[in-house]
Image (cartoon, rainbow, N blue to C red; front, side):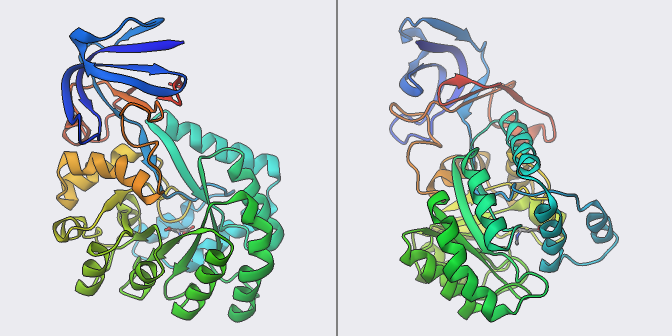
Length: 381
Ligand code: NIG
């Protein structure tokens, strides 16, 4: 069945050939975009939806979340807002709750958060393991994630679990744990930071994952400058995420590489860190993605619109840059060319705003502007 969406006031395609169109229409068929062009030339279809001048853009591509978890960290958040610094160790609280939860509870919690994201326009979502930290718990986290989300990342190297030795834990991650998850994940990640994994340990994990054919991602430079960005670029990681504290060398290395710098403004705010230097990265020529980092500790939001508004209002990205980074940038970070753009042949992931232009995402911050969402050609909101 073909659906034509007519009356589009402003169509953001992220397709360099088409650019941004006013007074446009789109046709969806078999889960794909099959036509985009002027409203007056819209072809007939089985179903017609008139969006009456609203803005249409690709669904958000949220390339960084940690949503296989149980439990709650409100008390930690309250302590942080009272002045206590964010530390990697808080992860252990969620590990305890996650290990104690049943498969059904973890599945329901993940499903609930993914549905929450979809209702806000997210149509492609990555999530990570990393709150299991044992072979059994990482394997079931990967399995549950793979049954629900588009992209799954193994993050056994999130924290050395309480009671384990760092070196023997890295051996476990690089061997038995990777073997247990490899069929359910496309990516491997490591939290390269003081209090988590050092440079040597991070490299061991990433190389072991690469040997098994996984793509690489790195949590780097979140709590201070460090080797994360350098390692990510040297090993050809698809993205390095956080990038809150960057040296000039880090910025130059990113600008000269294919590694996407994924910035996570909701996390920077929630952990009372400075905002990542997105403007500096863009001016140097780096590719920047925006993601939510939805997780119960450092960034408990699934709102990509909040990230876009923050990027514009506080990180000095233009609206166009922020929208691109939250859609096509996320797709680049996940090395996908089927999402993040509304061009013929792309997945029909369509986000309609109850607003005449994408500028309203920053002009009206905090207002729920999602009016309709199609994912893989199916209307899901
Ligand atoms: O991306 N930095 C490491 N991992 C998460 C935080 C997880 C947590 O605190 O539970 C992040 O911020």
